[in-house]
Image (cartoon, rainbow, N blue to C red):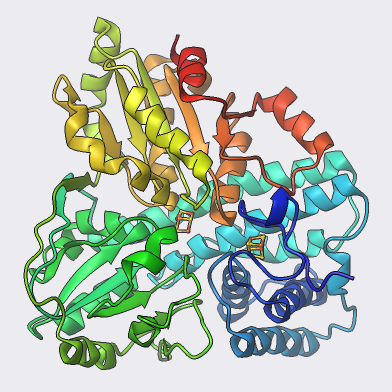
Length: 518
Ligand code: SF4
Ligand code: SF3
């Protein structure tokens, strides 16, 4: 008998499922607890039975789902405490109708596939909703959908019924990404094109990784004038482009690349790393003492900074620790610079220039090459794709997959003053890409599928799942997806995706470039 079953991310064993221990490091104990959390949420949603939930209850759905995303929380105690909180809430709501965790992934293959697709998409959306909520932004439709979706997961539906739910979810996730965009830009201004140094400066430092801008802002404020430099890592890179964040003089730049390289990049680090979301990997002994988690992230034995009732977090302990560690002893200049900050506000400000370049033939095609990064070798495809994209094409990018090629930015040149590689931000900034595509289609009076635009996406975890479902719900066709297709997509479901949406696995960069841009 297998000890666990999880197939929610791209690195799952043999492309089928982790059954002994997670490739990510998830133990059977935590896998079981996370299934129990999921089942408890279904029980709670049944107990609430569509009754409007109060903000605390809404937050519980978001936080619990967020916690079960790949590479977020590996701490059995934190997971057990979350399960108990949900079950207590279910009992308080009069819930006796329990849902068994073992039913989540049992049953007819196609139904398991569809149920899993919706569940994993909801986990991704929960993270975005949670980031927006801590900035004071909620949307009643988005908040209520967690309850609706979890209740639906515990019910039987036909294949068509599941597909309808999944498409409805895709549109709700669009509203959620819009909400987070409003929250981030409302609090910190519109991202502006920003050159980002990768130089390591002499002195104490804290590296901030993950996606939560509010955590970064609180740390920047508390560390101001303390003699500690702050750097981003992984998905936090685009934070360097927000006016209200970049204004802090001790916010010095970016360190390292994407999440899957952390064990190498953090080895013997003389500073502190703050994890605000995924992706945390099993920490190595050389740096585990230098880590701290916050929000939904957890690793057994790693200190966790929780928010107080007002949402305030006290980072004084890690500022002190960074000072004691002393940081880098000399400056190590970076051998390249990165540029980020091409959100919808900036890109749309040059929309007429883009359209004029299309009309004059200077710009033949736009590719969106984005998504999650990961450890598999096949991911060189994305580097090669961007390297080989013809000179008269633009590449938009977002999420941590950009670390496969963003160091090439300066070498790629520009088209009429528009850089050929535009970093639009974090994975949630897929909203920016969608916003730009819809606006360009409107200006040209055509559909999004008629634009000279192709999407070449990489996936790893469940945020990529919710974004993909939004793109499909918007009717966007012929998306290329890699490095491999999700294990939870059954042959029947894949057929629907291929026939209805033209979803295609990546092949080779040459073949795909030819097929997409001629
Ligand atoms: Fe395996 Fe991915 Fe699940 Fe981790 S999250 S147990 S790697 S499928
Ligand atoms: Fe990356 Fe984990 Fe998905 Fe936000 S940080 S995109 S993998």
